[in-house]
Length: 139
Image 1 (cartoon, rainbow, N blue to C red):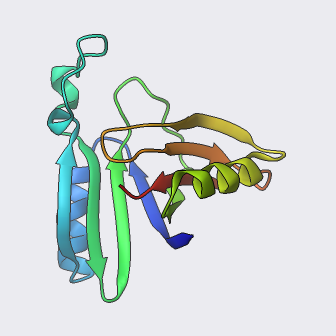
Image 2: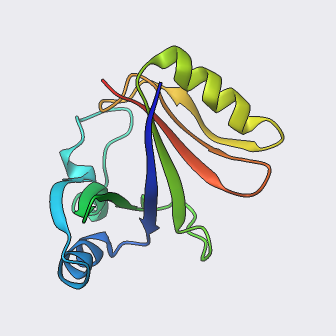
């Protein structure tokens, strides 16, 4: 079952500043903030020092709406015009696979569905209309 969708902002190294800005400007409540330094260590892919304080994921509540944001990981491309994506949360892995498969029809997979430390099935895909989706399965 699809649980919900919400806007997801992708920033270029100024995510911490953006969280504070939206907290003030939109009277947002910060429900959570993780940095790349908070990720479990992976010796195959160590987190560079310059990335450790960048925002991996921030969850803000603006009224009744969820707003999520993160920084682009250093070395990854950042393109003006692609800062807003749509995040979709799904309750089970099989439904995530189904939705992801439908969204990739005529589009392009950015990150195939895979297990992450926050989700049993997470991936990113740009659909045929140029909209980027972050598909995440609840734990």
